Each structure stands twice: as C-alpha cells, then as structure tokens.
Amino acid sequence: MGNLNDKHSDVKKSETRSTTLNPSRKYFSQLSLNSLTSSFSKKGTVNLSARSVNFTERSHSYRSKKSELPKNLTESKTTWPIRRIEAIFLPEFTFQENLIKLNYNILQSIARGAFGTVHKVKNLQEDKEYALKILSKAKIIEEASVKQVKDEVYIQKTIGHHKFIVNCILHWQDKHHLYIVSDYIPGGELFQLCQRIKHIPEELVKLFTAEIAIALDFLHNAGIIYRDLKAENVLLDALGHIKLIDFGLSKWLSHGDRTYTRCGTPLYMAFNTWINHLTFSVI
Image (tube, rainbow, N blue to C red; front, top):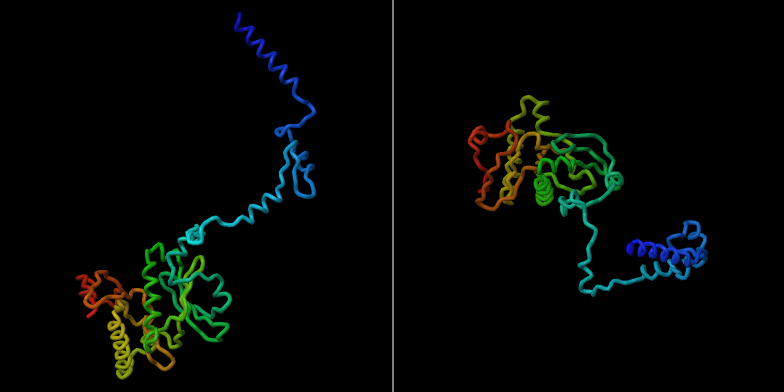
C-alpha cells in the first residue's frame, strides 16, 4: 500500500509541475516553419525566444577564415583526385576536352584496327592534312595494353624524325578515347600497291627493300625492335619512298637483351619462329 501512495504522489507532483509552465510561451520544439520565416529581419537574423542567431555574420566569418597550416605544410593539403581511367594514361596522354572538335575536321576513314580507327583529318588552323588515330580506352584497358600504347607513342615520337618513319605530331586523351596525330602519307599501303600491280619491277623492289633495311637498322641502333614488319605497315609517300608506321609491338631493349613474347602477324612470321618460339634480340 505504501508503494501505491508513492506512485499517486509522484503523479500529482508531475501534474502540478506541468501546470506551472507558461502556456503562452513558445518553446523551440513548438516553433513552426511559418513562425521561423516570419521572424527573419532585414539583417538576416532569426529571433528564437531569448536567443538570436545572425546567419549572415557567421557565414561571412567562416568564409573569410584563413588556413591555419604553416607555409611549409600547405602543399600537403588533400587535392581532388584524378579519375583512374585518366591517370593510367598520364603523362604521355594529357587530358584535353573537345580538342578534336575545335581544331580538326574528319574527312574520311582510312583504316580500322583492334582498338579503334584511323581517319584522314584536316587541321582547321594550319589548313594541312594529318592522320588521326582514335583508340578506345575501354578496349585498351580490357586487353591490358596500356603500357603498349604508351610505349608506341613514346617510341614513335622519339624516332619520328627519320626519313623513312612516320612522325607523331600530337597525342592526347579525353573521357573515352586516346588521340594520336601523325603525318598523312598520301601514297597508301605497300600491300595495296602489290594488289594493284601483280608484277612489281625488280628495281622498285630493290628500292623498297633498301629503304626498309635502312629504317630497321636505324631502329636497332637505337635499341628498338619493331616486331611487326608487313606490307600493311609500310606506306608510300608522294615520291614513292617508304614510311614505317604502327609501333604498337615495338619495344626498347638494351644491347644483348632478349624478349620471350611471340607476337606479330602469323602470315608474315617465319615458320620456325611460330613453331619453336624463338626469341628476338638486339645485336
């Protein structure tokens, strides 16, 4: 019975406390949206009973707050990260958006490869024709060929000054593609010439063979193995001289080093190389 009396006494005390509250006063939890918005003043203050908050002054003081890091530690602040699909092609392929739309006009499609297509384009500023290779970044990543493409651009740009090698003019990337601009060679492929002319004169064959040998000798002296010599990768300029293209399978090697990857086009490979997995070397 004593417990019951205590419970009733507690209820009475709580009722008496609730009646002592001021019914006319609005507490913070009872404020509605209308009461809040109506209490805005011209200076940007909100009156909440006895408390007043000036949002304008607070935001202004927050924005004008300077960094508290010492000068020697400012470089350690976190920067916005570069997307991985862009970062893996750096620094060889710088990121430039809409460059092809601003500077180039696509005239026609020349060839198609595993990763993309080659187009004949015209530079709108220089009024000059170039060959533009557009490669899919998704396909390159899927085939694990990122290093191969980067090496191709670096090698071609390094040795492109040679008379019998196509020079790489410019290369960049955007969100979905890689772009490689090189000299446009108007004579077409040696393979196409062989199809048009069934019997090429012997003197012309000697000229082509000598120029190809000179180009390969230059590459080997520079420590580069080509590994994809075929008629489709030999172009003819306006005067009939050869130009080597497509250095996608080329590789830098030191003197005496070897490679153990069987690569190239099977129809142009030596039979013993295809069967016995012979290696390539720089001598």
